[in-house]
Image (cartoon, rainbow, N blue to C red; front, side):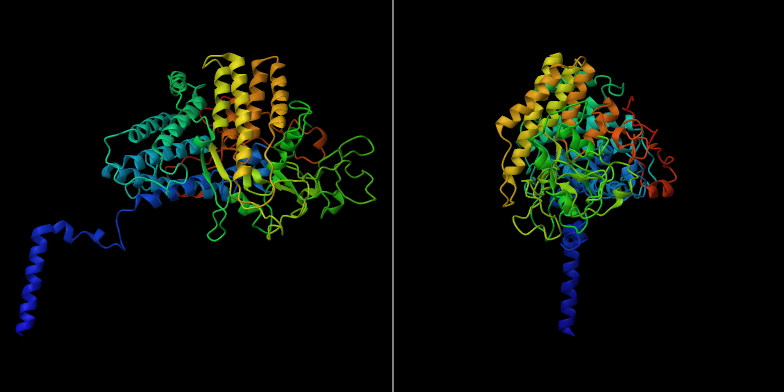
Length: 582
């Protein structure tokens, strides 16, 4: 009994001592390393970056899988092919959930705990990502939950803020982020490194990105009176000069080569590592890049073609099923483009002459061949943007085995805001007289943008781990292309035509991520894209009319049905975003 009594006394004395010395510490559940109440900053940052970037690009859950079709960079079957996106579509539901439930929730925690601990580099980065994410959501959906978003359990049913009220707060948030990153008195005991998948923890690079995003947002709203001093802020940012102007500054996330776990580009996973293909190359894009469009860049062949898509066929007779569109000169007896597409000797419309390997489907087509399986025949996404194959002209089926020799690797960046994008924005600003120089200065920025865009393709070609022999675009080819664009710009009879040329080059350079171009088309009306209602021309027999462009996306259905404070579902053909004047 003595032993037990003495042990009890020791236990009681120990308990009193613990309660006296540190009551808070005794009851602190964070002493249990398996059940922390505070999340580590590193995984929060990494997780939020992946959720944001994966929701922007070409993947089944990425918004560019819809906007890329709307902007006629890619084609695909299903709702987007008819401008028919619905609130239950996978890309809509997945991106909305990734933004709100993953990225913004992680960023909220990261901002709060980093400000409390004095780790202001983490806080600044998180604020930039938060501002950028909300800007995308406004650009896509218009009015969104903002003030009361991510406030559970205090707010169960957030109201939807007017997009015009959100944008000025995003500029403030970016300013706060810059101040955090430039604060030399901050403790910054914990700082980002490899967990920052975009800039590796470089505070100065994030400051440059923040200022560049700020300029982009101000440019998008300067034509409406939401931020009255938008143009003055733009002038100040340009004069300061700390903007993305080199590849090393590009706001992007580089994917890897691993397939377990799979960190390859999502579009590569979708169209190379899968048994079926999702994306076709837009015929509108193909004809502009190969000089077949009669209105713009006619007769000008773009040297980026073999990097943008890969032709599985070299001989039209090898096509697996009757097709709808094959590149090259495809004429029937009346000198019209062939619409039948049945590759056999009895085809009275004839087979393609000078077939160049390109095979695709029309946007919104009702032609019976549009639904034919062409997995082993269609042209597919290439090295740029998916990390697929460079088209060296040898052809070959892209299957789940990734081809026998020199398989592609999927290790390319998701480009969000780049030096070439900034040059095209500067060209627009100069042409509109916001910054000095007028049409001539705009021309210089446009040419710089084209050079940077070609340099980006060459960078991707050089850095991929693929063992395929991939050349870079020669200086001679780049100069020849720029000269052709330069001549077209010089011959333009109006600033409106000059703007069209600038925005067309921006559109071409963005292939693979169509988010900014979806914004550009709605706010400026350029580039000119295929119009199924008025621009069918030779495709009249294959294209369905009566389809109106979507000026905004539908909300996720469950947010409308479950949130009593939600507005009515958006009418995508009429409910414009606040900055859209068209």
